[in-house]
Image 1 (cartoon, rainbow, N blue to C red):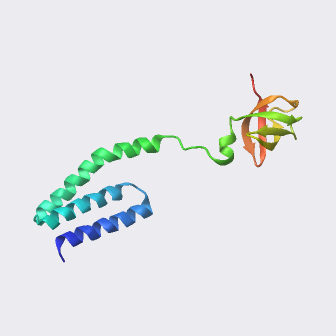
Image 2 (image 1 turned 45 degrees about the vertical axis):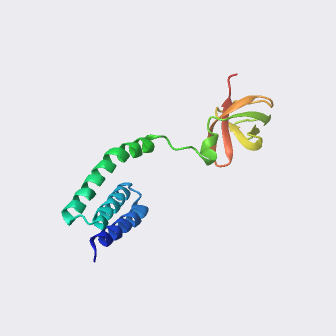
Length: 143
């Protein structure tokens, strides 16, 4: 088998493995194997192909891995009911420790107050402390 075919097959295998592991490392090695395949296709000897593979792996690791690390450090975007925490709403029906209604983002939600014994009257502005099932746990918002 020609050297370049080996490198292309290796690159494909590494990319498939990357898709299953999501480590980001195997994808870099896959690109390096493609570079070595190009070197083999040009007709360079095996030692040069290995040097291209090692050099490309090192350069890609040095250039790309810090970007990947900084991307992973960014906080995940809150979605679903977790995104409601901290949002502001308007009391539409009296909110007590057990029941009430709040309009949030144009939608009506079941709500209860965060503090026991606290009653929030209709027209009051509130903020969401947490979501308990389909019920917003709210507290008065200071305006």
